[in-house]
Length: 352
View 1 (tube, one colour):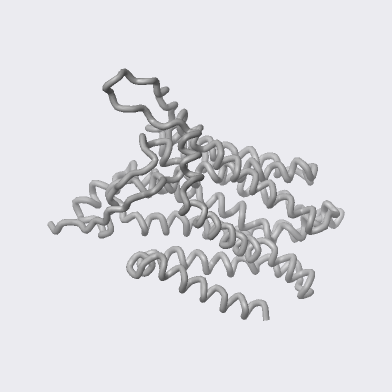
View 2 (cartoon, rainbow, N blue to C red; view 1 turned 90 degrees about the horizontal axis):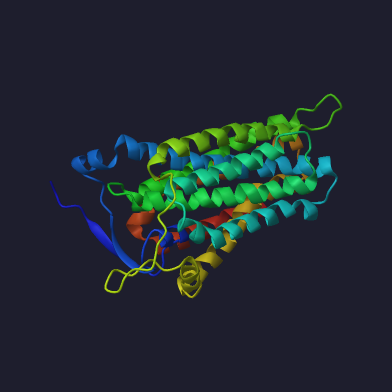
């Protein structure tokens, strides 16, 4: 059996979830860059590991169904509530606040809750969000608030699932990370095909019943909750409280506040955050606002334009399945520049 190829990475600062599970904020660790051998694969992909991978991937799928439906539903929401695009954009503001709340609280919670408990907590938040939406035209303020619940739940599960896959031994990490993120885009892909027909089917008085769509992610959310409880039952618990240790013993973990402060002083964190600020801004615009743009500016048929985001999501799905290997082989920095240039070219084609 040949020796596996490994690469040693020096990490300036792990993500919030990793901070909580390690005693230092700076660590060196090895990631296996080669496909696992037959023995390693048999050892790594046990039934327990496969179940956890399935739970992690399904959590991304559920998030994708929620996010991928917004573009198809926004025109119906605007017309049903009688609000402008400026007002309805509050749902994106609520989503931002949800993710920000998770960023500030995740490290603190990870000092108290283990991996499984955090996965279940995230799933529970999303179930609450969809349950509050799935009834006839909920009050607009309540409807906007549900996006905070959904986003903080997604953020908790996103962080924990990424951390689990990135640190599980015996996995070809870049491929499995590509797979679970592809499942998010799979959710975004199928969402318009469920949301558009439901929202376009008028009720007895001719109004849209767009809110009935949320029974779909509600059902998926319940499955997500149950799957997380079963798959991560070995870590569905509280973490032991870290007490001050006697002199001469190993130092306790840094406090959550200290880890957050150290994160905010790391230059690379701000650079990557700025990249995602623009990256996700483009994704939200392409997948969320494009339907209203096509209806309002291009005079498109609302019943047909709701399916357009599926093309964007389908491309992202294929990219996340097919591109991890070439990206890993030729280098992330180089490939990201190439992807950005390709995106700019096709965006000009769409615009013009």
